[in-house]
Image 1: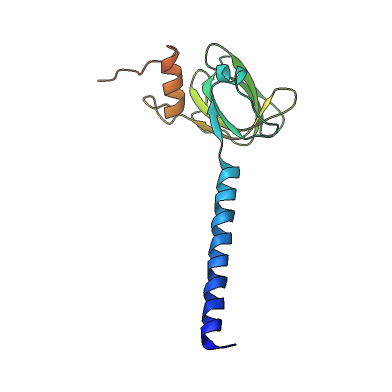
Image 2: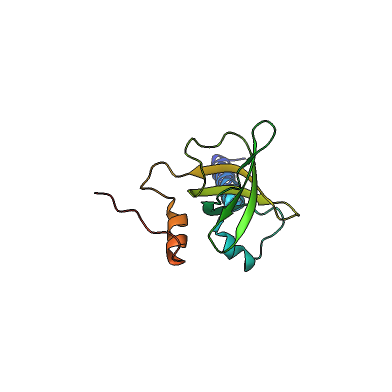
Length: 147
């Protein structure tokens, strides 16, 4: 093998490696993508079994049930529909009824949403952007006016 052939084979091998790395990166990012839905949006959504989504809305009043250990069940609503959610883990400190929340996870076959992460608002003037926009468009939530 001549020097020129060795150089070309190293360049071709490097390009093949970069192509494979790029392909795997795009594949992984495509698998990690999750879509945002409000409870009323789920009636028209065609979700694949096991598809990860973000479910957002308000924690419905009177639905928080603490189970054994760190298990918590509650409902997320947009004041049109509600979805039962289960979560095993520590909830954010500001998680409470009638506050904005985004959960991420998948649906079980029985229609219960199993969340593996829960995000709650962090002060009185903030709500996650996607939740606020969806609730505002439905006329359910207005920003508080503070002076």
